Length: 444
Image (cartoon, rainbow, N blue to C red; front, side):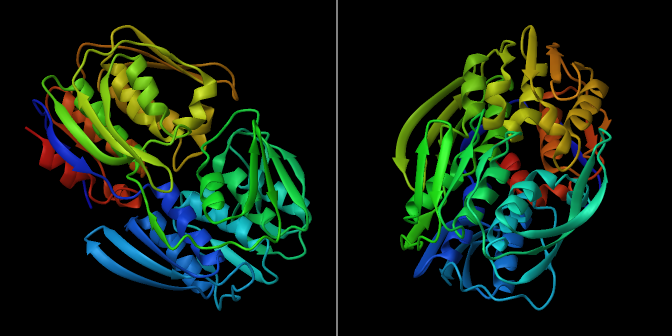
């Protein structure tokens, strides 16, 4: 897909539902594959990332059937193989640009008594993996990866990665970096260790893995900032799973409805997991008019939200809150441009090791559009500071091959004056293939 032009919208109105939450979908299909019994997963998103996890599990011998509910939505039936039922794949596993697939599957493969090579697409091949390889090696997995200098000058490890597991030992591990993916890899490998594996977090991260493992009757306990998992406990399928709508996808529309005067939208059946809904708390603190209409429970809490346009104000987002909204910071940076006063995002350095350096991609694009953005602080404690402006102006910007940067620029363009041209938006299919269609359905 080539360049894409965005023109200003007067407002957005309507009701919308989102494909299943990507993070929950990954974990649902993995746990279903590791359990005994058949699991039906509804509202499974047919985005590139989740399909890469599905393909990886099929290569490991898991039988998965799929029924297409719409262009981008599937119902899956997963026939579980149990913890020890995976087969050595005949060829390397390709995970595309899905960091979740790579990191969590490394945890699963650490428990398998065979060798597997995993390789990734270009952007993911530049993302650091030593943070996940280190604890898995401590547990007994044999891991070989590409070693080279990271952007900050340290030696790190990158895909392709070869891993041979089996005979794992439990560990007590204190997380040096807040990362739900690394935590998840350790917990999945802990399923295979003889004894209890403990993971301690100094900053709490999203708890999708803990919730899904509880649903599948794993021997898991959460004690304040510590998660304990008992190894070699059989996972039992709950039978049926409905994946709540993706809160990260909803975030783009929450911001759009908040900054366009006269807007009013209702979002249906979206995940309201407290460890993931930091964007709602931040937007409300900024003055956004967001109201919960209903609440129910599937794998996790979910519900309906009403969002109306409002006048936003600048705030400081503390570093402790960043893990619950790390994926939403790009679109919150757009919101900050339209807020009165100054907005500060503390501890935002993890944005530099996503699909692209999102601190760089968002700062460059928004500055070109007339925003006042600056980054301060040393590596490891960076702050993004944005002074609100009255108006952004349409101009040529870049997606940098990153789906969240691209979608944030679409939203910024709809609220800017004049035409905004984004160089390439094909990357949006990575997580949100029906994004542009939903935008068009609401535009007034």
